[in-house]
Amino acid sequence: MHLQNVVQKGTGGWKKIVKTFGNDILLENGEIDRALLGQIVFSDPAKRKLLNRLLAPHISCGIFWEILKLWVKGCTVISVDIPLLFETKMDRWTNPVVVVWVDPKTQIERLMLRNGCSEEQAQNRISAQLALDWKKSEADIVINNSGSLEDTKEQFREVLEQVSAPLTWKERMRSRDGFLSIVMCTAAGVLLAQKNLL
Image (cartoon, rainbow, N blue to C red; front, side, top):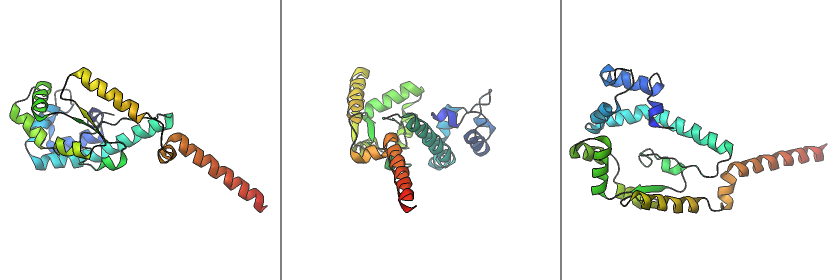
């Protein structure tokens, strides 16, 4: 699930944004001008908080349903990319917390290149979030993204191997297979208890 889906034309998130920020926020095709919206919210903390409040329920619900679908399919590792993980307190629901860290200079340069924005605009976006060094200190696992793409990919492969290791007993009970085992054992216990009572 991507943020794009939450703010796609006609969705609940799209309607809330248009109602709040007006039709000037729309492109000719009716989609939200995300670059313009970004300029507005990253230069005004009150508007950014408002946008986050408007979209948080849609984003959280979308994430929940995507995870549930993957869990039902039997996925053993589900990776969720949540830029505001700590701000929205969703770190409580994820394990382990993996933070992709980058040094501040590289972060500014990459953001300017990706978004075609000025250094001031890039700094405003970065300043609007919790400090990456703080997030790094709260992480269970850190991937250093300051080097080459190949270095980052190698670290990701190592992390994937680490999180794909056999589950602890507690983790197993939270897995789909563990849940199904609990349901089956409970059902069998209830049936046996009923049989013994008759």
